[in-house]
Length: 94
Image (tube, rainbow, N blue to C red; front, side):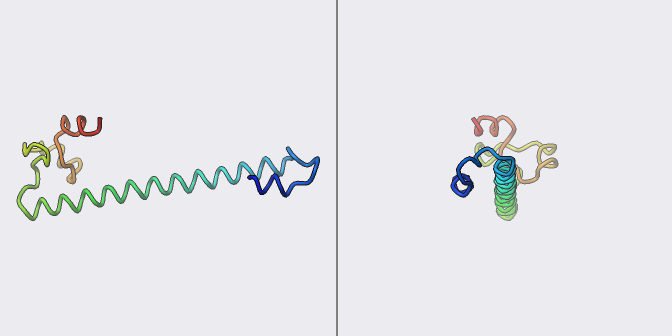
């Protein structure tokens, strides 16, 4: 944006071209930010799945990593990679 302002000559500030270029740049930055957020979420989910596979291999799948209590089947069916009961997850996220 500073470069765009520097490139515009005297008296050209505030033209429609400057506004559209700024809007285009902002849109591209937003797209990149959203893409990165989605990628980060997918990386986190993949890591959770890998940890669930490890728990499956060592015989602790379906038990909370926090308390060792069983995670309800309905929760595991909805998201097989969960690591805690609903109550424990709520506390963990606070």
